Image 1: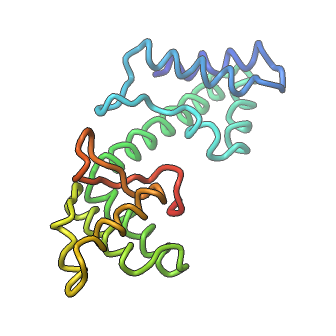
Image 2 (image 1 turned 60 degrees about the vertical axis):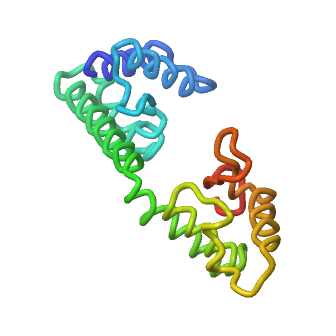
Length: 186
């Protein structure tokens, strides 16, 4: 990790161009992390962009101190990078914990969307049920559709699929999971 931190600084130091330099050095750092086996448990790599782009002023300040070539400057830069990597690993660990994901991200997102009338009450109930069960089918939703035709459940699921909030699970056409990419909840 120290090699990656120091190499990142040295690359920027010898390649001080403004256009494309950031992307190039982040890719370089990313490649070094992969080469040295620093993947997180679930197979995803640590994201250098999250470390270096969080606070650009601090990033440039730490780089400037390292540019002085002093031991203190290099140590301060290395500490900055290592703390950023540690925070990124902790963030990935939290996001890998379904309970954290559920209570801190998914449910608040649905509540926010419901309050803003982006989704309906019934859509919120279906999405919350999906969060609780992780995989749903029509029979899991019958409690929300008492005294209504069973086809209404299918219509609501179809609407959520069209809104890109649900997606069929694998090859199954009757089981559904959350889809939180490219939809109104983001």
